[in-house]
Amino acid sequence: MSGLLALLDDVAAIAKVAAASVDDIAAAATKAGAKAAGVVIDDAAVTPKYVHGFSAERELPIIWRIALGSVRNKLIFLLPGLLALDWALPQAITPLLMLGGAYLCFEGAEKVLHALAPHADQGVAEDYAQTDPAHLEEQKVAGAIKTDFILSAEIMTIALSTIESPSFWLQAVTLAIVGVMITVAVYGAVALIVKMDDVGLHLARRAHTGVGRGLGRGLVQAMPKVMAFLSTVGTAAMLWVGGSIVIHGLEVTHLWAWPYETIHHLAEEAAHLVPEGAQAAVAWGVTATLDGICGLALGLLLIPVATRVIGPLWAAVTGRKAAH
Image 1 (cartoon, rainbow, N blue to C red):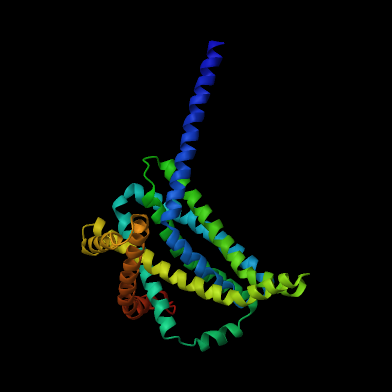
Image 2 (spheres, one colour):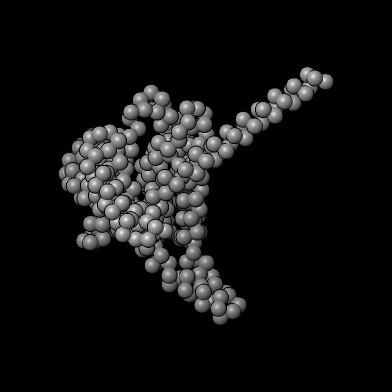
């Protein structure tokens, strides 16, 4: 009997440890997901363009294929790669984050330039018009998964940098949870966004009441504005997150602490000008705005480097036309 009681005590102790581990994983996953929120916003804002131009019945299957590719990116390639890097060369995590942050700044600045000076991609439009729909879908899905890989790498690296645990398995499980959780959130939101106009059209035609039909017409009319707003938010998030990562990385690596210290000082000064209840929000707003401005400046500096140096070199090495 005493042996049975001892065994039950051991089982209870193991259960407590397991419960604590679950709590730790949940807390770490929540923290990591919150830190990566800016990139997640951009991911959700970027993805809907990949289903533009396809028939309504192909939209959800395309999103599903991209989501599966995103999970594969995160769990099969990025998770083991980042954990191995963190174990073998943890000093590389911050430079890797900064490299990803610089890429986000470049992408965000390029979008700003295109918005200010739009150019018609007539040749691309004609190529697409002449492409077989099935082949075009393959191209779009492949392009979306490649773009997702870059954003997923940034998300997973940010998540890894926030996990404060010596346990390899806790890191692995937390990263896996963050990867799956963010993928579900992003592509679930994307699916809802791209189908909302179809829902509105259905209500406008089939609703039994005037209120329902009016709601449907409102949804149809609102979706282009919603998509434009999401694109703007996504670009702002790119610049904010990218600028923040680079500036913080410069401070952490002791390469150049002045930008981080100056922004932090200005945020504190601005916070002191408002009532205590609003100080945290003002400090965050000033920090995010200045991070975004710095991100835009860095991105504008990187555009000629990417288009005139890196792009031609990449084309020469791969034999393919540069992406930008």
